[in-house]
Image (cartoon, rainbow, N blue to C red; front, side, top):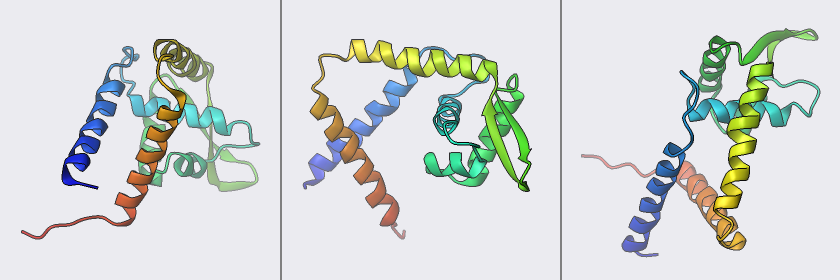
Length: 150
């Protein structure tokens, strides 16, 4: 691995950020990160209950960060409802409201279908390799942070 290849790899990560910024306009107050939370809640809904800690694990984010996002979503026309779990009142569960389900359908499922059409000329194995490479890169950089002293 050469420094020039590392530069190209890091530059490619900026392309990823630019791609996210090209998403369709979201409703007022919504951020792309909110959609990640809504989508995670939808996926986790297949199980009996969805705890805030479950969402945190799936998104590999801290509890305080997820709690903040969920609180923001609750304020945005109650996209997610918080309620105490009846078996353990210390546990807070979340679920999508009808508006939250509508946003997931539009801004996740419909958008992903349109992107699949638009990007159909891309090689599927190249896409899988890119995903795999970025995951490993993130894991390695998290596990072995590089710090400089000035």
